[in-house]
Image 1: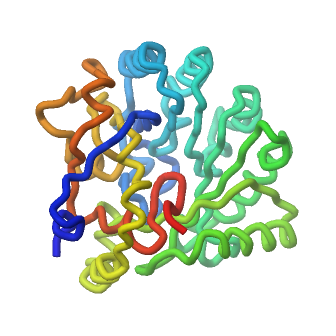
Image 2: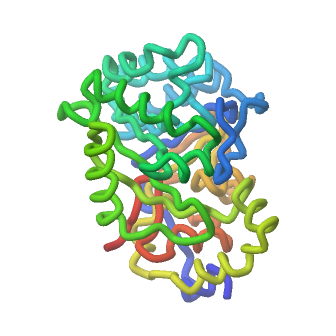
Length: 314
């Protein structure tokens, strides 16, 4: 059964554009096994200053309330700090998806202070509170640097001060669905505090999408068919109303528009009749649009659902 059939033939549509999620490039200091962006130190795709300025124009003109900056490691884009500082002038809420280890790269040691000065909401991937699981997914030595990174963020007030929000992201280390978000959040809070004296605000559970690098692993390990069956069988209609594509537009490093970050990585653009790039952005045309779907969308509707903000259904 296809995703469209599972929806009963109804056309999935957006209902607003409250979030502009901007991928500023695929360059990253890591090459995680689950990465749907296929980011790595070898990637050269980087958003230009011209395109950054166009995103800023759209934020100013249409007063979009939330800017979600992602990558790769977004901080490796030479325009990253300029982008943040200019976006703050628009009075939009800014989120950055931070991998906790890029702050150890040359010229990035002051990132915690920069984040705090600009009151960014920092969202960090941490596969588990134990070294073995984290390093298995993200590379040898990543866990220790991630713990040190979290300590530095706590040191400037993240996860402690009301205005400095630090959220973590959990992706399963394998071909299975995440556990209930509230229960694993409680485990993370208890263990990180007891083991490392680390505090954070919320934990988001995100299902591994059967695309890009994770799909390659599923095929190599012989898990593709069983994993897809698991997603399809766990379809939860209560998740559909909270899908992130319904109030978000995704922008790639060239400025092209997509319904979500996952469609972006599959080169599945928005409907051809709509504005296609940030340069011809029109919120009236994009706010109520048909959403392009395919079978990877089962990943967002399985169990409690999955979005860039974690589970979408109880």
